[in-house]
Image (cartoon, rainbow, N blue to C red; front, side, top):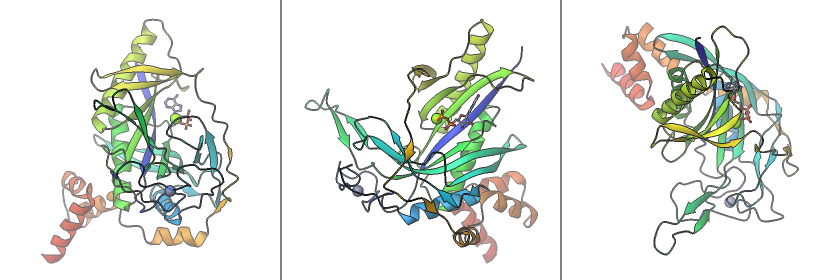
Length: 339
Ligand code: ADP
Ligand code: MG
Ligand code: ZN
């Protein structure tokens, strides 16, 4: 029997604002632990979050660039869970009313172009970070650094539209290109500014209904994401062929072995008890603001590539390479102007 992989991705992109999403602390990476903190991002009782307008503007740019519908009214929600790097005991996110939904991007995999749907885009705050001691006097000790707490994230959730690891990577690279072009994210995978969870299932070719999915968590390079998806697809096919059943679970990718292993099953899945955050009013976006964002969007990679091919007569491959990087494309344009 032939099997077809089905893949949906959840991407987190850290927004390149100077300050955090609900307070005025700096978002700069690499500062000494806990120096970029205040009562709001430390989660002290009685403090109130104030939304950073720039976060909304950056999110609108991404929403418009990916053909999403901008929801005129959206809401922040509390996602409740306990973790030592989350002093409030909840993360402020968006849930049933996200800022944008129903978008798409075009993805080219080895010459085959397909439209990949975006289910939703929403804003949320990041958590802090646990640092596990590795020097003689800190071995065995875990420390909390809250510099990252409350930094703004975009979450971009795709439809389960991808059918191979290559297509998933092409989609990811497309999103990565767009956020970098728009100047809303630095796109640094190593520093965790752009990270991805991959949902993977398989189904017999020709079957309409989706199979049960596994979610692969936080993998931090394009190469590892491809490896993790390929491994997971094989694992699920082998399992089904040997009479087993895929169970819904969260799995971790181990880059040393190239394998995924179970982290937690659905039974242990979180119940986050989302509810509207009473500290933040509903977010209302005017038509005029969206129009203004649309009018000031830079030329995006797809449009650049087409222009290089149609107006300048470049081969598609060359156009693709030049358009893939904004600085390179701008430099090329400047050279053409000057020649
Ligand atoms: P959760 O909160 O469980 O992660 P979300 O709705 O936020 O759920 O994300 C689900 C992600 O999984 C989406 O990207 C979606 O496209 C993808 N997905 C849903 N069902 C399947 C499936 N059967 N196979 C692969 N991916 C799937
Ligand atoms: Mg998920
Ligand atoms: Zn702060």
